[in-house]
Image 1 (cartoon, rainbow, N blue to C red):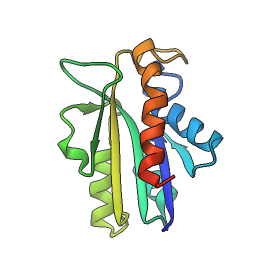
Image 2 (image 1 turned 135 degrees about the horizontal axis):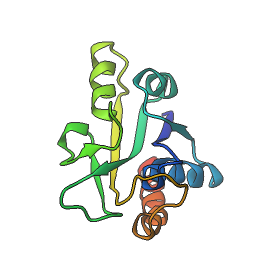
Image 3 (image 1 turned 180 degrees about the vertical axis):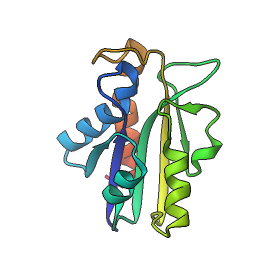
Image 4 (image 1 turned 30 degrees about the vertical axis):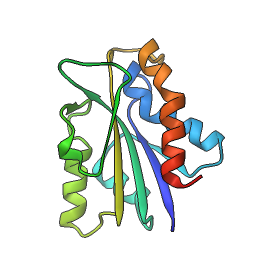
Length: 142
């Protein structure tokens, strides 16, 4: 089974870079991972041919517990809003309409604290990266 992890986010918007941070760590560990800005067409191109797709993305929740993550196979079940204008749920809907949705899709939505300008993750979100990376590796069967 082919698989890929896609870290969605903007590395220049502090905690919005959590997806790319996990993707970079997975790449360093030899796992198949890529970074995306969340554009639906680019997401579909990135996961093309993969049976298992794992997406890691930042979400804003109210109230928020920065660093906590939610695992789901249905992006609309996340009790939050994407940190992007057009989020992963809309990309998945478009993929379904175009018959380009992967066989298995898992989304890890990470609650964030700060999406202002900057390249550092907040301490709580940064602290979540190692455990989330290990969880994603487990999902990949590694």
